[in-house]
Image (tube, rainbow, N blue to C red; front, side, top):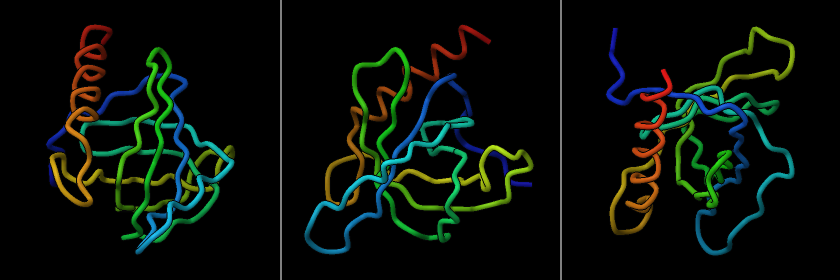
Length: 126
C-alpha cells in the first residue's frame, strides 16, 4: 500500500468552494455551494460534495479556514471520487494540489507556507 507523503490534518469548520479551471481565457465562476473539508494536507484535500466530479478534472478551489484571514485559491486536480457512507452528502472527493513555485499552473509558495503553518498547529493540538 502506498504511504502518503504529506501529513493529513483537519480544522473543524473548514470549507471549500470550487470552479472548473478555464482552459483558455476567462475566469469562470465559483459554485454558490460550499463543501465541508474532511481533512487536508500540503498536497491536497478530501471533502464532501453532492456533485460527482470527473477524475482528472482541473479545478480552482478557494479554501475558507476558520481563524485565518485569507481564502487561498489553489489549483488542483480531482484524483478520486467515492460514495459517501453518510447521508449528508453523496460523495467524498479527493483532490491533489498542483506543485508550488513560479510559473503557469503552479500554486503560490505563500499557500505552501500557510499549509505548513496549519500542519504545525495541528501537531500541537493532537
